[in-house]
Image (cartoon, rainbow, N blue to C red):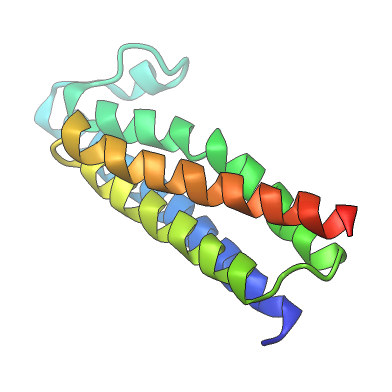
Length: 137
């Protein structure tokens, strides 16, 4: 497998972020059309309407743990450590983030969201461990 395979999960994660941006735009537009929000509410990003609150929270979440994902993917690529294990873990992380985002923007049920978060958390931790082992050897 080519080292560049590590970039496909990164591209998928970026696609997820774009999808969440699209969704928040659509939900905010509907809120304005229904009269439950005004365009000026979004100027300072206060008082998010109920229709888009979960999406806004998920969008913020896409710039927390995934930042560490991008960093470790790039570091693994640069050090030549983007092998099968790293790429597989990267896909586990991204798929868990997709599932987490889906739950977050729909039902937002913690009992469904938390296991997906934990799965991604540990997959990402394992990626950092792979990088540390790569550097130590």
